[in-house]
Image 1: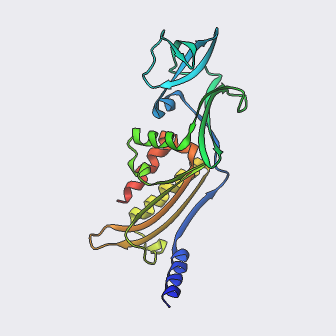
Image 2: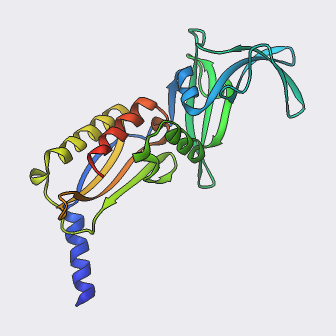
Image 3: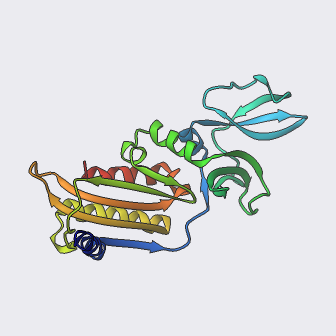
Length: 237
């Protein structure tokens, strides 16, 4: 009988959980500006290497213009710490899955070219870079609650023990505003899923809830998007 009651509760909980979805294809490639690289903790350098000019990434503030340094036995001279690329070039990044681990790749390439026709400047585990980026920018609601990172990233937020969720029309204004903000982000990213169960308030008049939220990982490297999401989540403790 007890197992039957648990199953009945689980089924009822699933039926009453609110789900909002924008199920296009999760974005795998995104265009970024040079300032985004600094948000991630890097400087973009134009260097002279083997008699040719090329682009490389280095830790922010590590190198200076005119400096010559050695990497893996080869010599590089910093011609410029890039503030802005020429109009025909841009930075493109994408997420690739390798043996169950997401990797963040970025390249500098002409705007009319396809992936692989530019200069690869970054290839690192996406999870490590994303967490470092979120921490650097103080987006605590995100890095405290990240659940998994692949081509999409899932967040899980919860407070209080589950009961039967409240229907949409009975949600408090703050919860409805949160849903609206998240749906606006979905419109920007073209993909997203929000599973939201709200249980009302506890004796201290604080909301109880369970939230699963999924977004394309590459979009979370856009500071504007991540800040909007972090701010939306401030509706909940």
